[in-house]
Image 1 (cartoon, rainbow, N blue to C red):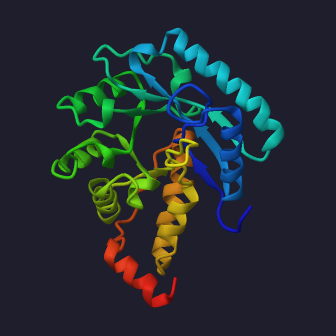
Image 2 (cartoon, helix red, strand yellow):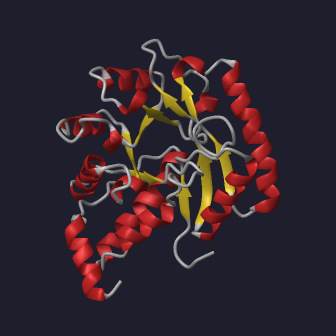
Length: 269
């Protein structure tokens, strides 16, 4: 394991063969080795599950596949704590989330997303439905929803509702397109990001590690950046999993792409 803080990744897709994430136990284990070697000590894997399927056989298949992975992981990477939750697509206005086993550990938070990376007109109401059922919604990759750059007011509205916002490492690094990168960096600049997850899919084009996000932020040459990196990747994930409110993340300007490239050129990197 490399030097540095212990990290917690609560958004990734390592359950084999159940969604667009890991295709096999072997690839999932390779990802877990990479997680461990990069400093991740706790992993909550979050396969996609439509709200309408929370009580169907699909969920049972996911749980069985996780059980097989967990058995192998206990031997291969025993120093990584592996847990199962779900990334719930809230696509049903009558969503029933009364089963507390759907959440992120036992802390009362649940990871949710909007369908097809769209920004629905009813987003506020859908998140309120989740809250009315006793959950703290953790919204996955808010920066990736189409049109959110021009409708950034939704970011502040969701936070005012008590929604926890979890950005993707890949968005910050430009791997999900220009709009997602701009919004992710604006969220940092305005103190609107609460957590960061890898959204790792154990596939070549979706394999960014949480540590890359930590290193990118912490490596900007200011002690404040180290504090923000720890909050996003360790302290606040721990708080959410424990049923506590995440700490406020100080606003922090991340250099724009061209400034970053120029800095690396001058440093010979």
